[in-house]
Length: 355
Length: 206
Image 1 (cartoon, chains in turn green, blue):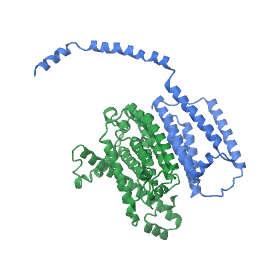
Image 2 (cartoon, chains in turn blue, yellow; image 1 turned 45 degrees about the vertical axis):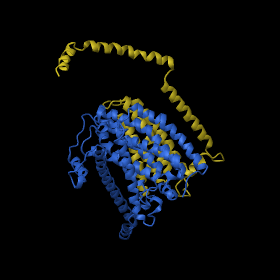
Image 3 (cartoon, chains in turn blue, orange; image 1 turned 120 degrees about the vertical axis):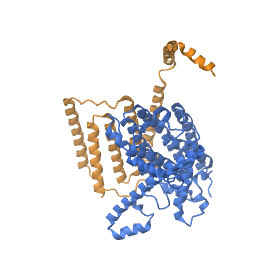
Image 4 (cartoon, chains in turn blue, brown; image 1 turned 90 degrees about the horizontal axis):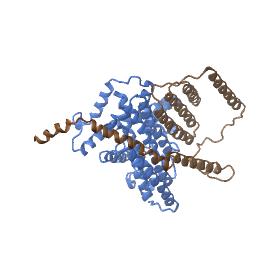
């Protein structure tokens, strides 16, 4: 429901409704929420890029960006400004309409996914009763942007990158969905706020112990593949395909793809936190009396999972296409189905751990 | 507000449906079709039927459209354009569409619509229970029939992917090998003979 739009800042909500007629106030609220989420999108994206570069540098025994701002903290902002001022180039005989449309697909699906995430008890714009399913659905729409980018560029490398992406996403979507379904079995709801509510008696990864742990591992592998990050970055394998599907993009359009990739990583980490680690709940309820700390718990846990994904990236070598498909269809999928049955038995026999 | 949204969606759906049929670029028509499907999902969201909306997004937009795009990517080139059909065919299609539209509009305007008594959105639980209930009004029979159909489709896909059996495979695999071997051989022969001679002094020199 869109009714809880600005309730995370109650004073502003009351102020708007006292100043304007209800219809107009609601419209103003929607615009404000949109702006707030766009800001979150941009800031989180830029911060994640910086974090990635710093983490990568540490893994390779370098310093990483360290010139702009304190310890290089303004580096990605400077990069974004540079990208804004760059010329937008295109290929001859490219499909201009699809070429320009593709980045927006990727961006808009990422933004829509942000809207359903419960950042804290009150900071959730769109709490629908099928929240988790909605997230899965959106992740499958996002790949269309990549496919269109590859096609619209009229470039062989971009095309091959896009096709690889299609294969990869269609395959790994299955694992993401099934591992989440396993957890839904335990939580008993698809509504994200409800899933968080269930975890007040222990995070789901503790409640579900063995099957939950397996589901978490499968989710992390499949989630990394969904975001096209290393070791699953065949889509933009630089040694084979140039830059993959965004070879022909420049300036801000390239930045859109780049930011969306990082936001997607954030979203996958956030889903993992919501479903396995209790979202905005503090461990053992230590800050239960201070609900405004929820945002920090949520972001803290999410960044830990993000760090885990970055660790993957700088540790494992890239897979070949056949290895990628073998991993999904011959190992993850059967494991996932068996795990689903195991979870069902666990829930059925009441073998869950609850505090 | 709701009315305005509905008419926006309706216009979008109709506009993109027409664009999808009339576009001469194959992938563009697929994208217009995608917009039509997303518009329909929007209408479901407006009706508070979130589950169906998400299914619409996941199955049609995320599944079927991705597969269609994928097949277009495989068989079509960006510079190709679809040919325009003959005038007689276009007229025939137009007449059929008008007939279909007439049937639809006739049904819609004669059907007595009753306002829904509940405003609560349908929960997934209710759908699931009804889907597996074998009492009156349950959907267990169609559910089972569909699962058998899907199983048959899956087995069919595997059979097609496996090919025509071991005999056909054996006759296929040696063929490229026999072609490859002479190619490699000629390539080696074609290599300039003095190359090793040139390399040799370099190896000796240090």
